[in-house]
Image (cartoon, rainbow, N blue to C red):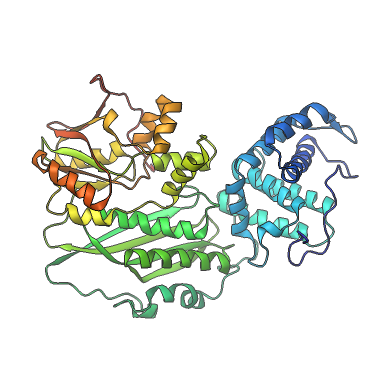
Length: 500
């Protein structure tokens, strides 16, 4: 079966040094990196043996006397191999639906992977200059439409990862590659509102929410920006699910039962119908899982990065909402699940930490698809004195509870629950503890209860099949102290994530 993309005009030549010499050391390094990546894929080899073979056996100069930038070559190959999955997702997000990535010609895949790594991870060369270099490389190997395809895909990736630098696509208008705004809403978003009371089939200016006797409306909003809250190459379905879940986690922290949400989607002008279809499918999957529906929203276009905002709504019994303000000295501090997997997952996906494959995949899944503890939140109503979800970091978020409640807290580091991935990472690097408890993106619930409620918490853990761990206590004073097994306070450079 040919690996040529649908619509491709000619198969690639076997990678070799083109007759036309490269213009400089960096150009020569890019060509060598593409050839090395092709060899790695064809031979099923690892990056390091191929890098070493090229470094030790390839002439230091190309035909025409051009030296190879050997450091750039080695970084491009190692980076493209280490981040292959993330880079492939970047490319897939910019491909037309009729061009499955796995069916692209092997040389074309090598060019796109090396180029994606350089554009997304290195900023020492202007994005447009790098794009032009790889388009020229594509011309060396292809005589059909592949160079134009490389240009379009790399431009899309650059706009997703370096939008401030590369600017808007020339002539793209307000919604490149997408239908008219109202057709877009009808096609992708109206089905998410079907049957929802008050959504009015997304045909009006606002939604209608009827009050419920004896219930208080709970509302929360969270925004996510590509490259800040998720990786630019993450699958659209996963982006959608994370967006919804982090908002549902806020409702869980207040003991609310969710019922609907509003969505504002600020879409890059290179967004395609295929991307949006997958994004909507991700929302639909979680709508069904959590019993919510789209009630309304807005769409717009931007030359900048993908920006999403979601406002979620829920109901809680009047006067019963969990808040940050009820913690009392003497309370036990408890947390659900495991802490630190959000940070670990991000580090695994960025290639900053190595874990066994199964543990790395589990941590990455926790980062991309956090689990809102809705059932727990509902059961904590009337039991917990205060609660919050762990989004900015365990220490920082418990600190918010302390600030509002006018108390202090102490956490015993050895009692903080870690997953198998967390334990493995900590065993390899004991200094990682501070990062795990301040990194955030865990979306577990941390809550306080009276000491005499400890047995009820233990029973609730069994009932929900969810670890609920006592990690410390509330005390008079202010702030959060983390102490080791010897009782000495641990020094933390920061308590959690801050945007500003």
